[in-house]
Length: 606
Image 1 (cartoon, one colour):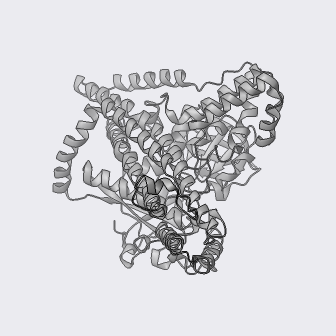
Image 2 (cartoon, helix red, strand yellow; image 1 turned 120 degrees about the vertical axis):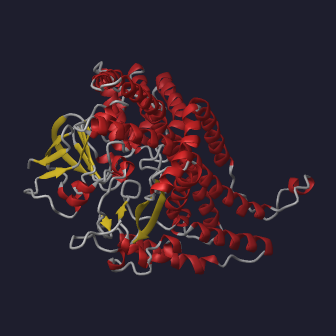
Image 3 (tube, helix red, strand yellow; image 1 turned 45 degrees about the vertical axis):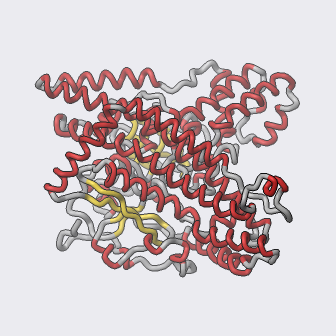
């Protein structure tokens, strides 16, 4: 992508200075993640959808491995015609990405033939192959759950000798740590196996609709595949069941705004058979449905509900009140499905020929077939598996802390995954020799410095994009997921002339509401949201479903019409504007705002 002569550009990567106090941040990440001189000639955008915060050293694996898998599936397995994979770079702790397009018509044609054969096989056998995927991903989760951190006692258990195992327990330190990393890599390959095909089907239908119906809005296309019941909503459904049970057993008085989860659980033990029944149901629901991160599965400190009960217990009081009031807690799935079919029927009738109508039916049918995967996979991959993955890494951190190498288990996340292996090797050698680990004096100063660097980096406001402004940005996937188009770029460059009270984005979910803004820059603060507020954030996570029952509308900096935030908002029947780019910097907590989910406009009223 070249920059037209005389036009503006975003800062070049080479022009970005180190954040004061964070010099040396580069050592936290692998060399291949750093910007190179030739990268100044390319257009990059900040992936705040998945990486809205500074990336700690270990968490760098959550960009390295996913982009390895996404590109492999897109470019090397299924041969998408017009795109290869995604390059990523990290600067000042933030992840920037760019897509690698295929522009040679002959190469596009060659790749298309392979794509039709390979992707066609998956589309034609989707249900059978998807069932196999389900088995594979559940087996991977069982594998990560089975990984153990060896106990290094003074003597190995006698059974190691009598069973002729043939290796001491320190061998398992490295083997089991490797197993965690290898399983995480394999999970991401499975994650993208169906995902890119799902998006591919939607892109084809989207482009057909845009050509056949030039006036059709992006949201209208998306609404034709709404009203699907997917696994990602199950954790929220479990909370609603618990709310009904609380009312049924006369326990509603325990679930009030601002409650302390531990105090509520303790009080339930004193409420007789009803309290016991609720606690039993709570225990059943927790595994697996509370293995859902408050983020999107890319940061170790975005804990799951199982690790931190703040989010579910912040949602329960409203659900309990709704049950007591006789309100319906179900999502408007049937209404959305009826609306979906009405919209599709009206547009189908506008097509002139039987051939066009047949093509419309076929493409829409494929979209509805693949759509549930686009949301359901997230529970198994980014949430359940990744929760277990970070728990296992934390357990290896505890081993290092117990052996004196680290001050605390959580410090393991300030080491790169290859550095963790070095620290574990130190433990393996010392245990075998009867000597002392040497890692404390080596790693603890590095970790202290990195903590200071992360804190300094968090003060930086990353530009939304870097590099030359592209002549055209027509990648439909980038538009639908991240909400980035030529118009977005012009807005980022400050070409829009308004009085500062208007923020524009994508009309993600219909409806118009007014309310008081709650700006959340950190997902760990989600418990602060109060009834009827308008959530304004860099990006929402699918796991915030329970909070969507409390808020009047959602506004995000990043996201397109098929981003998870947009999809979830539509399924909950809540107005949303996504991909604003600047909402969190232009709106403050306490501002009264109007959210117009029909036009994609947010107005600050005062």
